[in-house]
Amino acid sequence: MFKTLALLALAALALLFILAATRPDHFRVERSIRVQAPPERIHALIEDLRRFNTWNPYEKKDPALKGRYGDTTRGPGASYAWDSSKVGVGRMTITAVTAPSRVAMALDFEKPFAAHNQVEFTLQPDNGATRVTWAMSGPSPFPSKLIGLVFSMDRMIGQDFEQGLASLKALAEAP
Image (cartoon, rainbow, N blue to C red; front, side, top):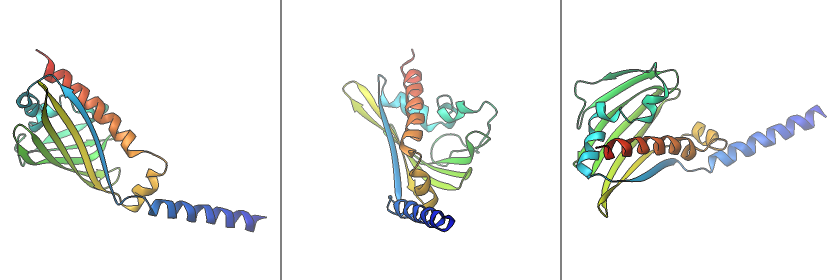
């Protein structure tokens, strides 16, 4: 009986690993919102990391978060590092800016696990308003694929992006 249970457990574990191995090698999470403000106004709230953190949902998750800005906080090369028991340890660096339509960032995590992702904000005119899209993409190593069988990265990160975009919208639309 014990031998049968052990074989069944081993078979289930093998099936789990096989399922994980079939998942994509990269992920992409993306959310958009329509904002009643010109792209220039919204762009300024994204490409300046001090202003970015006024609406950044991750900054709001941990009041005890310890953040450090780099030598510059705006434009390519601007950086911000954080250390938090709730949102982990990491750093973001603006890698490219095309005003007023795009801001790209490198997002590097040390904890709770190492990850190196790309973030992109795009702003497009939308019938007198601006369509803002926040996207993050990166590799999915095997442990991420295993976790993805139980937890939806799109749902978890997507919710945060939706909250952040709603805060950005409120800030950009304020008089």
